Amino acid sequence: MSQSKTANADPAELAKFSDAGASWWDPNGAFKALHDINPLRLGYIGARCPLRGARVLDVGCGGGILTEGLAREGATVTGLDLSAPSLAAARSHAAASGLEIDYHEADAFDYASEHAGKYDVVTCLELLEHVPHPADIVAACALALRPGGAAFFSTINRNPKSFLLAIVAAEYVFGMVPRGTHEYLKLIRPSELARWIRHSGLTLRDLTGLHLDPLTRSFSLGGNVDVNYLCHAAKLELPA
Image 1 (cartoon, helix red, strand yellow):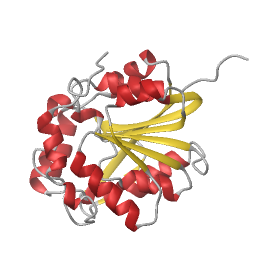
Image 2 (cartoon, rainbow, N blue to C red; image 1 turned 90 degrees about the vertical axis):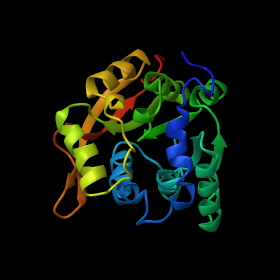
Image 3 (cartoon, one colour; image 1 turned 180 degrees about the vertical axis):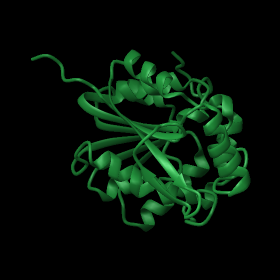
């Protein structure tokens, strides 16, 4: 298990997001796709666990797009990231929006080790395909979660279809995300994520596809998980 900040962070990947730190909250900027899918992500999470009053940890929070959405749903939210510029954007926007969010520049495993079992919900969206050891991130999320809590992950499948749609089309044809955002060999098959979930002591509850209509450039949930997908896992209650 990787337990150091440098062991589970790729400097090149961090630079991608740090360099764009100032544009996190531009709805037509580099992170437009995240703004567009955020209502769907929040709806997926909220349909599977109550958020009002919940203690939520957002791992890989970036500039806080999902984090703020969770806070607006009434959750008490902590955001983790290793990109200082992204966190600066997150803190600035939260303050301007009147939201109280606890942001930390911290490694997920280190933080989870110090806050084991503290959170009702842990989210980790669009992060796993950007770290050297994604299984360790899943394990950290499980460690931070209380028994009976819910974990949510999202990532991109690894197959020819996902290469064509998530990389060639999204990055090079339609320009929906910056070129070079994703590397094919770092993409994650659902079977791999399911295995990491089981090994971390969680139970897989659901896999749902996230789909782009290239004609309208709109997104929807449901159906196959061939390309982008979301995942719900649960940490079972301890026996009485």
